[in-house]
Length: 79
Image 1 (cartoon, rainbow, N blue to C red):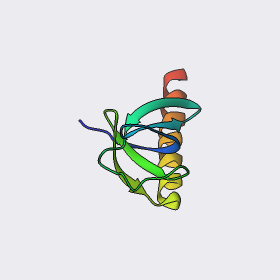
Image 2: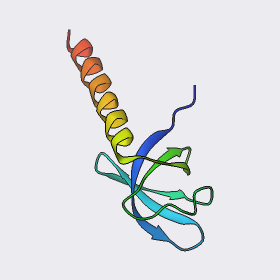
Image 3: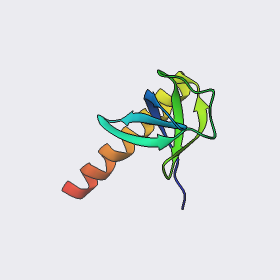
């Protein structure tokens, strides 16, 4: 199974590199496939590569769904 997640682009770096943030965690990624991405954009990240730019509303909806799934899993683990 492959999973790509939305992350906030917080810093552009030289050589098609950038720093993204998701849930307070920052991670370096390649932005070679989305050179148009700019700081403040949400990008879809898959195995260390930003593969697309995402509408901010869509990103928030997706992140809310992930948070809901995490809450359900945590509740199930406690029962």
